Image 1: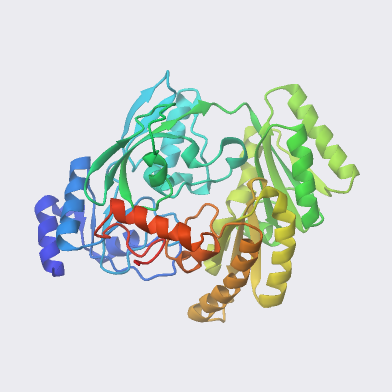
Image 2 (image 1 turned 180 degrees about the vertical axis):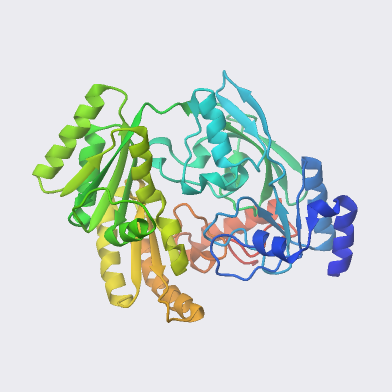
Length: 464
């Protein structure tokens, strides 16, 4: 069917204000943070109800017009990119919090609710929604569920899937499924809810979610430590995990810190070290602070830590977090090529050593920025594009080295994507983390929920 005919069908369903074809909207809603692909959507639809989402899926099936779901578009794997005349389905108008259950400690919300809005809502009720990351101010709940977002508190609180107790989804067939209904125990066969968490919009469209809340954090504090080498990172982690109730353990390189400080944040201390870690821990009682000081002193005496600072106030706690959370923004102007990978925590040192050697050999002229959630085995690697190098040549060079990187990950039993998903960027490399039998089952599952292939086509894997 022609574009004009499809737009006519869509125009009969949605008013002009909620069916946009202007260049600015197509450009902004047809891409995510990857900036690797030129957006070229047919239109952007803004449904306001489940019934409208189902009607849009029906039109997509009737007209063979593919759909790309769109949340806050903060993804880094091209999962929300529309580059082939797809209809972008934006959930930003489905942004209501529908209910709070104090007994269950749960919230039911539409997919367009901003993560930070949900966090604030929980905080006002003396609770917390513990999934957290730097893009909290723009990421939407539906997108975080569709990508099984992780973030900075995984070592204490786990991934998004650990907090979703119920989902309503519209499948590629247009059927509305009500999955698990907020139950704690529901042992009645396959848990379809978990299939949709992390499915990147390829099985269905999340139109409502019920998420559990946790007790509010107990006076969190932060320490930032300067370390002499890679081996010291895991030594510090093991010591601090034994002494404190950790909620986060992040690492970043001296190069990463240099960009953050150039971006406006002050250094945590004068001593310059090759590596830094940020550890957040509960400090509700005086003994917690005493344990933190004792751990710091022992690490310093043993040469594992060269310098450090412990937060003394909420404002300092927030400022120290900026050293880690501002890394992505501070290097954005260099158009980095990003990799988000993971290994078992015990194998982090081995992986770091192998990668250090690989990048020294394969990227001698490129600047490589390391940071990540080392406490859960997740590392982010950003290669910065040299100013004099053409974008296409830079991406081609990075893709070649990615083959070596992912081969090393496969040998260590790691994953090519720890928390960013597969999307378009990681699709060519899926076989490094999933064997052919697994991929065949993934294809079969996708076909069962979306037989016409209208939902986010080209993401995860190509049609068989």
